[in-house]
Image (tube, rainbow, N blue to C red; front, side, top):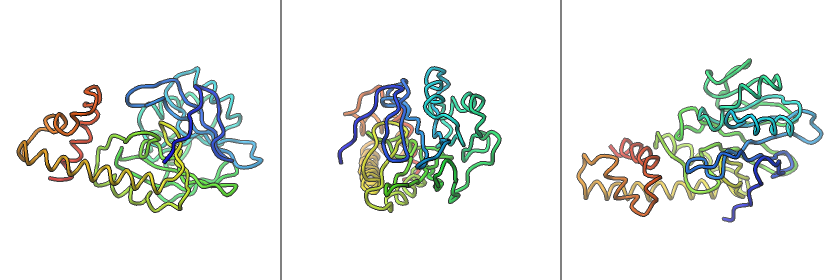
Length: 259
């Protein structure tokens, strides 16, 4: 599975007939190259849908506003600040409502619901509640011009795997995404876009099963009451220790799932 190249920071790059991406200059171990802000519009549409405006970084938000033009709605994939932090600023600047699964993140609009179709900017975006990374995580399925895509937020990344807080819910979400039609693009919240959602979700499922087997083996070695940190140090021994903190969150979810 070959990843496509990322754009330079702050420069809109077309990815699909209906989608452009702006990469925010906020790289880190958690955000990879930075946060992807997505601009969506159907053929001939004079307005835009903005998905995940990023942090409250005014220079990035100014570029988003300039590239988007009139904004129909701002959509949020989940509540983490690197996705939603700039939403209020952009809403004030553009006058657009903000919609998210979490009602507390919404502005001048109702919260998103699972299975809802958001019609805006000449497009129809199907909302899929995909908890696991967070309880409020959603994906957006969209298509035009013969191209299908799903905006996955942090549920599926363009590189590596994501942190999980509820493994049972996350596995269910991955199984649902693995049923996507072949060739459905992955437009992630971080990292490069990927060419096939079903294949990527299947790879994620296999990875989670492998990790679960490793955690089971660690518990057999360390004892059933082993701490999450002890499991991390054994299972993630080949991973940069700077990433052990996030890994511990996922291990806690794995232990809850197994126990």
